[in-house]
Length: 160
Image (cartoon, rainbow, N blue to C red; front, side):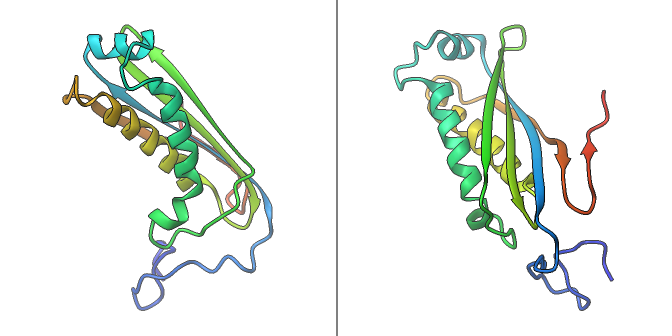
């Protein structure tokens, strides 16, 4: 049997059966960065972008995306989220914006994909809103930082 849970014994893709799992509190935290020109960063930081509040709109996009993860990622279970928190950190030194998303639920499957999807869409929203002034922005560093709950328990990325 493959250690990849989304494949059955014959190698065919399938949705994992979580029906027998216990419902537990689950939490996942993910992050990502978007790097840009200093002038683009200044527009975002100063709120001077003609399209409006870039960070506020990216926050809403991230939350909305987390709730649609089961529709976007094949074989991902649709789940009822109990909380999604989206935080931004602006780094003037790096001309970059960091997003961190915490997703929570009480259920039979984890929320890692919901947190990562929210990070991705939040960063893509910043790109979309700013691409007219900076097409060279770079999205990187998207990763899971921590997850709690379920059979595998608590996991946290190694400090670097």
